Image 1 (tube, rainbow, N blue to C red):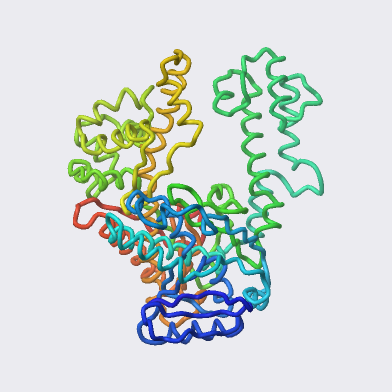
Image 2 (image 1 turned 60 degrees about the vertical axis):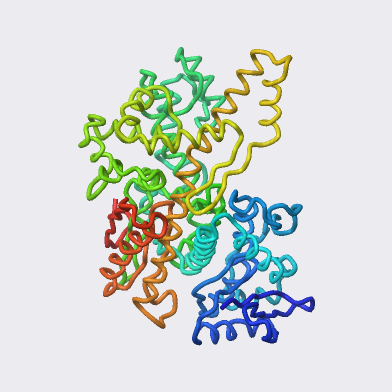
Length: 557
């Protein structure tokens, strides 16, 4: 059963049941919405809520201690259906661009719980007109698609991801400001009232002395590069990988300075002041924020939380963290996509890279990893290029799949993930470059430029099919895990039972009461198995997950 939530012209809310044509709409105020949703969720046949976007509707419900089991996020689903090759002939895909393509534009700010409850009533409507009409258009697109089953699973998983993102922001990642401050002080020295911390000041003095540049600002790449060159060093940039090639006493303090300065800028005391409140870090996750379906964040840098400060992620008293990550996710996804039984056997019950070595295809685990990454990301030179022929002979189906995806991209075609997310087409400049190279008066320069751009786009599509499918596996993993965690503590509010608090591509963290920690770890592993079955049915590719029950994030690594 679906219930579509929409806003009326007068600012109220209307709930429509499209599966029951004779049912009268239910009108209510924003204040009445949480009670209405709670009542429906507690009844028989829990509905799938249909709304413009989860970011606009769900936070106010969470603030009222109301959770929903399922939803349809029309904005996220629209993006998928608009661009999927499976729905290319639908009315939704062929219509002119409209309001559903426009960015949401919601600025998420911290607010008291009581205030959040009434955001729907006092804010400007963020929802485009007629969610009901958009829902009907999306259903038509799916029903007429080349593979409705795949798309329905993808849309359900994408919408579940939106619920999870909102819940993780609401619950927050347990975070100790005191530990963060101590970790920074150990690395950088005490927090300064102004200027650089003491350790960076000492390193600055060392760098200036080694380069005979008493006024040098090491934070300025142009000034630093000039100082290096004046000292007779053959540097063409200040990138760390290039500096490591230089044999000079300045390199060690300079590399250390750059590493610590990055930490200070990205996750220093200013970050702590801005993002950690009341013992929680609440990043603003953006599901589907990348064209492959991977998540992004807006502010806070949750997807780049460095190892130096992970010790500040600590469970509450009487609670534990379950930290879990999927081993070699993308190579295993490639295995399933290609139906490569030899590669599936190599990874069965063991580390995939070690399994590749055991087949005799390659002689070292490091070589297996380099070769696989090269296959998925298009590295055709150096060590990866040297190893690729051996990998291709051992696992031809897997390598053929990514090679065909690359050739499609080079031709300007789209490729599609396991469940139906398609890559964008290259832009107008790319098309113009290819056309210029094919014209009668093209030059050698035109042809070189066209080949280079075609190869670049081919590398993108080569990886798109793998990364997008891996993102789908992760969504299915989290969606099933969310349901399993809820079942461990039925009836409890979100923050009183086991719940997801962090996600990073192939890694999750669950915050759980101590007595449910082992069960939560088992749920993490069971959900991973289920995600593999959802995507690849009975094909014997495994997705092993390592789950550690710890007090601190740092203990899991």
